[in-house]
Amino acid sequence: MSNWKFINKTYLYDGTLDGFFTIVFHCYSTKTLPQKIYTQKNYMINFLEQTLTIHTDIEKAKRVFIGIEKNIGYTTLYHTYYAFLSEEKNKEMYLLKYLCDGFSMGPKINHRLTLSYVLHVMNMKKRVFGECHRLKGLVRFQEVQQNLYYASIHPDNCIIEPLGHHFINRFPTQNFILHDKNRNICFLFNQNDYQIVDSTHLKIPDISEEEQKYQELWKLFFHTIAIPERKNTKCQKQYMPKKYWKDLIEHP
Image 1 (cartoon, rainbow, N blue to C red):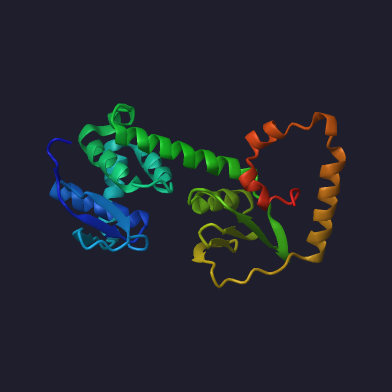
Image 2: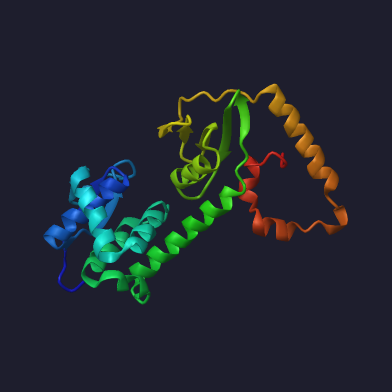
């Protein structure tokens, strides 16, 4: 990135992917890179830093989206999306350098793992995708009302959207609430549309009586078929990490 100029500014944005793509548009058009990027929500005021708020522009974000797919490839778009869901510090700077270099280099950017920011993007994508894949088999939905199901999760990364789309495809005729308790957000689906909302003041109904009966039967079955002599806690934790147990019915 020898043709790019680093400027002594910190960019602030709203934390959305469209907001980040707006930053990419701004940087690519000016051939400048900021020192840091923060979300407005997480930024701690520092009077020694010069800040610039980049307001989300949907049209500019769409142009970047199309530009990535056309010039760097769908694979790069895929990597960018999953890496953006990571909670890793400085993820925006890694992604910004990855994309800006990608517009010059094309799809070959994905093979330049000797570049630290490319390697960071690949590692972030791998961790986020891996957690999403793992939770697809660990999420436990519970009936709270007739044809309304609820499940809570505590993921390390913000994977509620791809996870929610997975369950839409799997249960297209089922209304459900997927609750990320680490971030206080819910993915709501009503068979026609979905939305992601703040769950701070959302009241979740108690499970139904019939659901309670099924849970008791499941726990009885789970503990009955277990063979104490073949218990392998280490193997169990490898495939079902203990941090996820709080959301499993079979683990109190």
